[in-house]
Length: 542
Image (tube, rainbow, N blue to C red; front, top):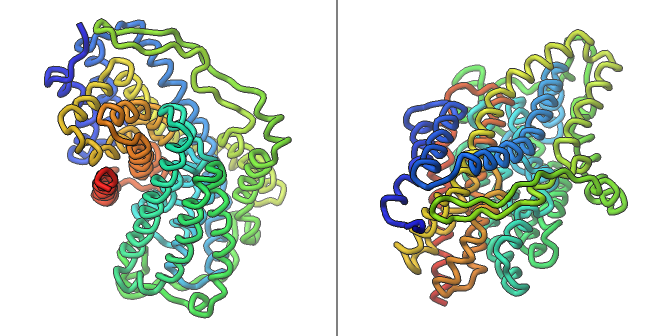
């Protein structure tokens, strides 16, 4: 007996995903709680309906825990670094420094919520941009909810060609495209991602102050989008590895040029912006140019406050972009081995002799930990941080890591159960059979679902890349189109994935419910996914 795509299998396969969304958005459950139940549902469905053996499910649990660990080993040091900066009140000094660069409030928001996180996404990924950007936005007076939403929108466009194009490489490997197809897919993906980049920033401006805000900064938005999004489009077909990093690095430099323009040197703000924390409804909190003082009473400069991020940038660039150093550090790799498994219906999961290898010395988590420990040493040496405060930092870090650890582990294990049992296969092939050539329109939604479940566009491309290729062949269309739609959908899904959302929550102290974040994100991103699907379908008509 083989797996069927009829309603007996298709509807049960949909249950874990639907329950997860309903629990978070409608029932207002915390992501950690919803993920535990969703994982349990996926486990039961895999074992009872899809014929997965207990041993096979045990192997998939191991794979999921390993994949989750590779993400958590970035999240934990990111939260630790955040707690260090909070303890020394670095955010106050950063706020003062940003206000000295430009007194234009919306430009400050775009620097901290779009340009800088995009640069970080270009070289690190794994939620680092959210962990850094959200608290920085909070430091200049952005409400916690919008601090999270803005940085989610601002950084996620780099989820395909950022992190030195790891997600793109995963897609190429899974889809087995030839050279010409790869170039065309890279062009299509980069073009759609640029559109998302531009529209996301306009949405940020609209949230801040509607049309008045857009009119105030549109030349900056257009210019920086041309450099970053346009630069990625140009480089994606030539050298995908640096196609996000290099344009965003140039964008970072242009920020300082823009801030010298007289218009943006003047103080400008929207008095009743809904995203800002004000002293009252009509008065803005006074601009503070006074250097921040930490608990010890010592004055901290902007450069001292920004030291952890200088270190993060320096270590990352040195270790990843200097070939002799990278080659030496990347020799050590750690991976697990898993055997081939099969369900009672004959659905195979291939053996993994070298599953999801990690290079510890060139890993984003390692760079974050080095930055955190070096900053801790510096702040202690300069008397910004009493030794007694380290215990409090460790305790707060431990408490804040609990929810992300549970949620991310359960979600990734859930995705493994669904993938190995054939639930993902049934869902995707059922959609192809039902829609035929019109499948292309919903193709980005698969990438979005994969990124949402796994918290990573790279994992989404691994999960669905081959299926998108098979769908294209079955429909007789260019696989470059479905591949581009797959990874673009993954970018959109990454913008509201639970892992990134939780990262923003724990670094801003937001406690009003994840559903509020998703309600601001999902209508915008789902609408774009459908639009991109329609654009892909139009390609077939040309």
